[in-house]
Length: 478
Ligand code: F6P
Figure 1 (cartoon, protein in one colour):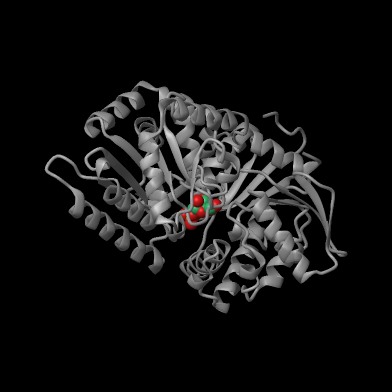
Figure 2 (tube, rainbow, N blue to C red):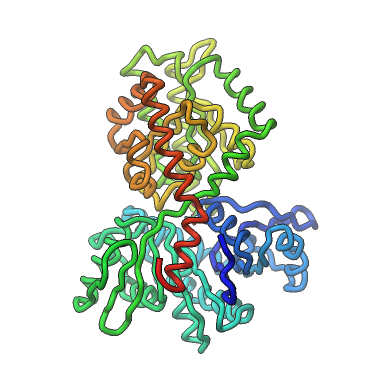
């Protein structure tokens, strides 16, 4: 992607591409994880610029020391990194509270999991205000501020409140819910007002964009859409903004190349050997109730029960990446998943075969690539997902000679990958079980042709395509 001459791009997001951790007296810089980091890192690396976000820790670090810790990381990354420090109370109210106990469940259609506490809302605004001040201090009026995700919706409005003028564009990485869900938010008008402060607002899919526009039309009956296609204009009578939808993606080539490295190929071979010729299913999910992991385990168990020929012939490798351990819901979900794994393994295991191998851990990109490369079918059963980049990484790391993808129809990626993937409704245990069986008996020819379709699509619509389109939308036209 070409650099945008004269326009510095400043990415702002809750997470940085790194997380700071104190180990005894030493500060350790770990790589950050998650879809947002996967998508934005290569774009900013190719573009150069600035990335501002939370350090990921609660300990106070002097600002000089913080700059010193982040300097070598910035040099290696190809863009400058500036850390925002948050106190424990702020993390509680803004991050665990409003972001992840209100907006996260609500925007994933799980309103019964929301804790609509006014205290969370106050801290959400307060922290956004803090972010705005730090961004203002480190940027110039001619910069383009690319704000990311639900944690920072009020940022553009916060600039106005502190009298700072910046051009701000916003990308929502998670879904936008349908109006009957969104309307339950006690701060619905405030959130919509804040979103209107951006000159460009971009969603992952047409579904999300339509949901947003439908809520706007209810709250602002005189608002109307001008234009058609990927990029339209929304006029509310007071504000005019551009609205688009673009599927976030991965660095396709980098994942392809990684999967061909000797170390990765050797590790993949070991995984295959350990499977003893069985059909390997792979699940890689962040620990989150939106990912449908219990649903996946139940369907896997049902497949073994319904199709007894699959017993001793298939295995599921399930990796669960730790996340948001400070929230009760997440801790209890982990217990539920681990109990389900025990139940299925107790029921079906034999002396020579254990159906589910489960790991609760973060995995390096190399290990991930090896797992993608080694396994026969990726199993993605999100109940709702903004995009889901795991399924894209899986296809990039797999040769077109085989490998299949079972994908939830409620993941944003399903819009783009419906032709090559086997789509499932994760709530339908029988349907997922049947699809698991089908993935095993599918002909090589069908598998090849599906994987070729998926790979061709992703090669074209990679993360650089996404980043370039977003910046074009923010600065002019697609
Ligand atoms: O867009 C969703 C997201 O922000 C992604 O970065 C990632 O999937 C996840 O949420 C990370 O969550 P957290 O930053 O709370 O660990």
